[in-house]
Every structure is written in C-alpha cells, then in structure tokens.
Image 1 (cartoon, rainbow, N blue to C red):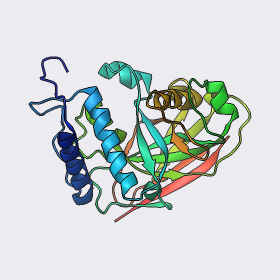
Image 2 (image 1 turned 60 degrees about the vertical axis):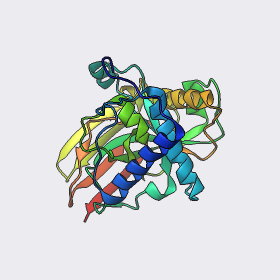
Image 3 (image 1 turned 30 degrees about the vertical axis):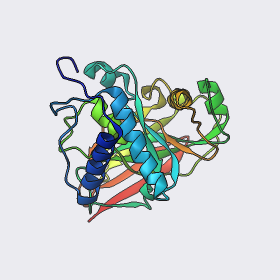
Length: 263
C-alpha cells in the first residue's frame, strides 16, 4: 500500500461501499477494487466495510452459520507479502444442496476444504488441541466469487469483500480420533483430473486455522458458538466453475461431498 493515499472512511462512505458490493452481487457485475481508487484503502476500513455488510445481513433477518478463512496457505501469503489469514462470514442462504447455479454469479471458483463444526462455544486464547477435541470435521467445497471486476485484488479488497465468501457444500460431519494435520483429501474434477492435499497445508493444521479464527474473533468480543461451521481454508488450487462442471471431494477419514454446476 506504499505510495497510496489511504482512506479514513466515515460511516456514510462505508455504507456506500456496502451498497456497491451488494449491487455487484445482485447484478453479477463486478466493481473496481477499492485499493485501485485514488483514495486507497486501509485495513481498518476493510474490516469496517465487512462488518457493516454483516450487520446489514443480520438486520434483514439472515442467519450467520459460521465463518470461512482465506489466505491460510503460507506459500501464497509469502508470495504476496501477506502476514496473516483473513476471514469472512457464512450465511445459511449460501449453503448448496448438491448443485450450484451460475445465475447471478460473477466469476466463481471452488476450493476443497476441511470443515469444522464447533461442539461447544469457543472463545479467547484457545489452542489447536482444544479445537480438535471439541468439534467435528467434514470435507467441503467453498465457492468464492469476488465482487470485484477481476481476481486482481489486494488483501484489503478481499477483506472488505468478506474474503470472497459466496457459497459452500458440506459433507457429513464426523468425530475424529487423531491429529487433523494428518487429514487427507482428493478433489476430482469432471471425473478425471485429481488434486490432493493434507491438513498440513492449511495453516499448518486445520485445527490451528480454527484456533486462529477464534482468537481473532475474541479481539472484537465475539466467539465461535456451538454448532457454528468453519471452512478452514483452501487445500488445493481453486477450480474455475462453468456450467457442467462436476466436483467430487473424498477423504479416507471424513467421507465425501459432491457439487454439480448448473445454468
């Protein structure tokens, strides 16, 4: 962000940006990134925008069911000079039923992930071990669909856009014995190409990814409540989605889930 005049937004400016993001989502037409505009964008403003958008959803009666993490790959963070993951909110209306419609989508991609469901409320300075012993795990597919014109966006843009959260498909949850770092999954694309990964690529462990989220939530006085879901971060490179794409994710420890992309 060096060399860019940074923006200190007031509440009316934040609400205008939320309007832009909601219009982009509704019309399936992306908007220019905030970091590319002359005013620039600070990280605190980005979090304020994401929070205002969440507040608007809650005011409409939408139900937050959990969170998703982004930038959990150390290789990706190092390549882009980012020092930590971010997160966004998951809403009940984002859950897929085995299909994803391309209607009103901008440029969606899917990532296979290890999903966590909290068995009790977690708050404060929790550890990965506490996470692992107090919840259930599943495989999942996360749908990301940035509200920006393209995928050329900065960390702060992604943060303002709720980490590109757009949808998710869940497998069946399981209580698991052992270390989540040893989880394995394979994603099959259109019955042919396969991509595989272990839990180790997700912030060192999917459980540490959840613990990081809980600690970050605690900074604003929030908790991960019992029953909430966490998508712990992309385990492989994402897949561009088009009508007709079929994705299958399988894990020897956690079972499977599938998603078909339709018009």
